[in-house]
Length: 117
Image (cartoon, rainbow, N blue to C red; front, side):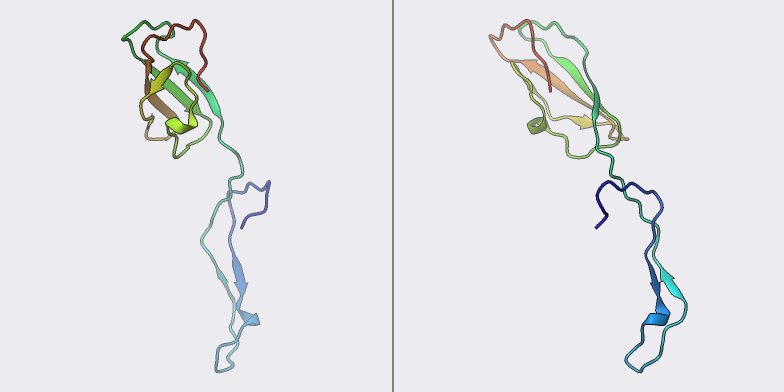
């Protein structure tokens, strides 16, 4: 388990084999080294949320784009607050840094100000 507040791209685990013996009592020699692993402690942030059209009328839809500072997994509508409308399931680009969804305003909604969070 990586320690908190640690970010490091290059890590290996090493075992000094001179400190171990097998069932016959033979002492190991040299060391064993794992493959590299990285630890990323940076948290993803949404750098922008944009709408293709921000003035909708009844029956219209628009595309909403969510851009992140790094690839993210698992973004779904339960993560997004969208007053007076419904969002389709967000779909990611190949890099998973840009997600898009379709916003459909609720029927009979009449609000001049809304914010998607």
